[in-house]
Amino acid sequence: MTKRLRQPIIIRGQEADDWEDVAEIFEGERAIAGTLQLPYQSRDAIRDRVENPRPDLRVLVAIVDGRVVGTLGLEVGRGRQAHVADIGMMVHDSYQGQGVGSALMEAAIELAERWLAITRIQLTVYVDNEPALALYRKYGFEVEGTLRDYAFRDGRYVDAYLMARLAPEVQS
Image 1: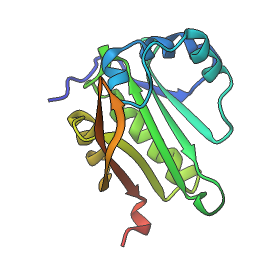
Image 2 (image 1 turned 120 degrees about the vertical axis):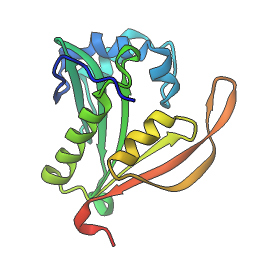
Image 3 (image 1 turned 135 degrees about the horizontal axis):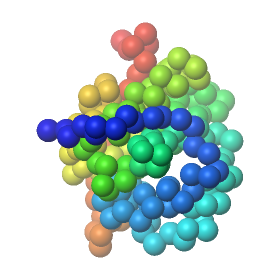
């Protein structure tokens, strides 16, 4: 059962000044374990990433009580895949399971489908990440395949699912 926050969750575009809060998210053991990010990244590297985003990346942040507690990157494709976006999300360990991921997902889907003409949003998720799987299914993502030995995590190779959501008007 999801425990909802009492404070509002505000979603906005990431700003350069967000880097310290984002660096704190990267320090969370659970946040890192659920992503392809490596632990022990330098704060300088995270600061550079936040202050100098790639041009094909739209980053949303979730704010609670004036603090960034979640981040979602939407990597927009080019050329023949200009209708496709890949997403990656991290939520601060202390705020997981409290609606932050849902707020980020709703905003990302709206941005992608209503403003960027994205008709396919895709992601990879570890097969044992049940909370993330439930979140993605809630927003219409379906498993399209299993990626065997996809990533090295905690001393062993783990599988991941490739999941995608097609915009409602293009589903067949």
